[in-house]
Length: 428
Image (tube, rainbow, N blue to C red; front, side):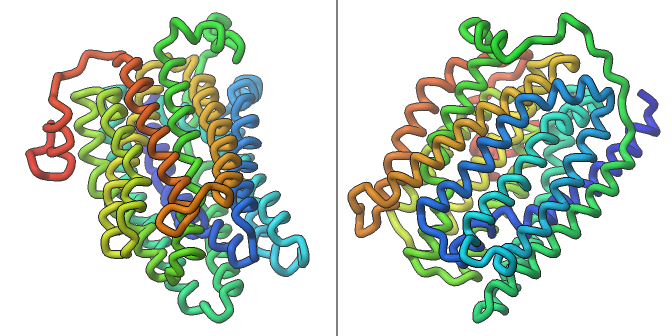
């Protein structure tokens, strides 16, 4: 692949990512508050998380086949990104056009919005992996995610500030931030179309169906990784959709406090993701996944111990550090484990299982959130406790079964974590 075309594509991809992160900053953490402003109940919040993920996961199951038959990954990604941008319009207009059915309409449109992006994600990830050699992926994506994370944080704060300004007419505030998100996605679509299409040769022996994947699961290290990730995401999403509900409905935090807390995750992600990337190139992705899964398991317990906003900043900082390493190394593990010809399909199956797990986790959490006995005066805290116990079970029993797929250096878990938080020099 010509070097100048790779550089041009990576530059276009950066700007695509820049405006995609603007969209995410304006939407991702504000869909649940939007639903609450439309008078959604806790069961509907569960559906708002579950429905987009089940439809998205089913779509991802076929994305590899569509990309193969279309012959151009960029064209497919471009089409679905454009459709996602278009879907932003009815999300903006939901309170005005769907009176009496606002929450139901929002769930429907968010499902489309998420599914269009979900279909494109495995193909985009496969495309990006072709631009970079294995030895540089961790460092590059760590750098890229650091810069783009700053963009996300800026838009998170801006969205929170806008909602605070319009707190007495909050639907107008949501109109503004979702309009900005839609415009940002159209701009990212423009830059996406400027990327170069690497030649990818499909070989008949590289094809394996979903049922082939299941049949080989007992012998497959990649399948063990996928099942581990799916199980962890089920346990995570028992509680994840309801942290916003807990903050805004139960703890009565205002939008500024809410924004500061959710932004802390992104800030710490920026600070630590580069260190995770450099370290993972040396010590391996699996070691990082094992450590971060334990940190992720602990997160709901922090909210049970104390609920003062200053204390919760620390809890959110731990969350940012944990998810930075986990998300980075989960995708990089697939890049290492799968050959280029199989990569799109492997990523599709990975996202499919995660989506199915998130669907059932969100539905189960939505059902249990209003039915479990109260803990320290809140039913949701009982749900957090259950989620933590199950997360630890997955981290302790399933994560050790995954094997690293390339030679790596041996470093103790303690030294690795200390290097990430800055108590020891970075592992380079």
